[in-house]
Image 1 (tube, rainbow, N blue to C red):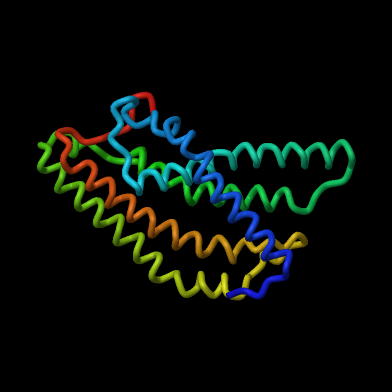
Image 2 (image 1 turned 90 degrees about the vertical axis):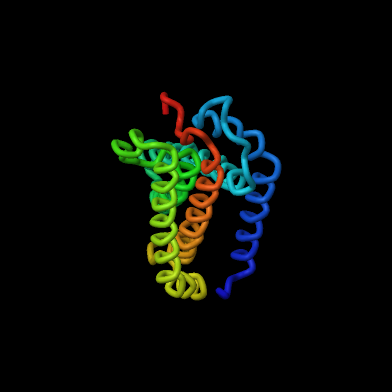
Length: 211
């Protein structure tokens, strides 16, 4: 485990408490909005895995607004007051990396990932189920291979609390490296969840036409 100062532990505890409160009290109100893209009102009943993915997504959706806010702050400070910051550019890059990485979970849950369906759409439902199993196997194999091969390196980054090496020097490597492994594992779980949910349907579940 990393050796942190008291302020470091305070920041981690504060962020953890904020995330927990958001997931328990704010995210449930946003989940129906995030589900509108998946067959509108005819969306299937959500599983526990779906709920976790959508609640994480409800937090990440505000990261975009946060990035815009701090970039506006940087522009004002730099060009109006001639006092540029040393943290806005790196924080926006950090948050953007989190969005890019974890947004794949929402795409997986909504079935909006890129798919070539020229063969899938013309075969029967049983053949589609076979293709779904094969696709899920490929997803899980890739995700678990990345997690297995990268876990030791990620834990070393976290264990030494590796910093970015800039003037602001945030712990981007210490947080992003383990997050890659965690995201890959959860993406494989979400893929298996989708396979189970879609298996008994007479037609494959797909995003709404306007998505």
